[in-house]
Length: 208
Image 1: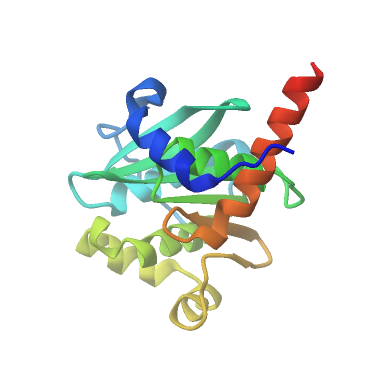
Image 2 (image 1 turned 120 degrees about the vertical axis):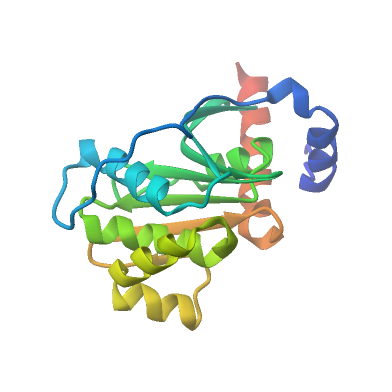
């Protein structure tokens, strides 16, 4: 049986980083339209999330949209990438709550070199999107401007604020939003899924 270890793979990825640079379009100069609370459609939720982020992040934090990461299972898309210095956060959206792609998320986390990768479903209301941004702000408070802290903090729901101030572990589910987080520095978040999907990839490659 083939044994796969995540940790040598991490070292190899660091040595070969230039071979898998993700391609994306910088969004740092996007004009931001006024944001009003209310309902939105799934098609517009991505644009609204971009507006909330762009109006809340501090100068110097960049946003890329539709970034593709090369992995052993092919190229996988990350909807938004936030960058500040050498750190970056990936944000992926699922079309529905039921999903079984944690293995792919682990691949994206590692091969994309993300500090954290968020996967959310739902978010078809302004409230849900502000709750989502609030969770990013809790992880990286220095990435957000003073105005961002005030505006996002005022519009986040009590449920999310309480979760973030107590036993928040990066995952939660409300009536309108479901969110999961993987962190590269926490092996238990991703190693098991990462090794499982790599073993599956090798198995199917041999059978092809």
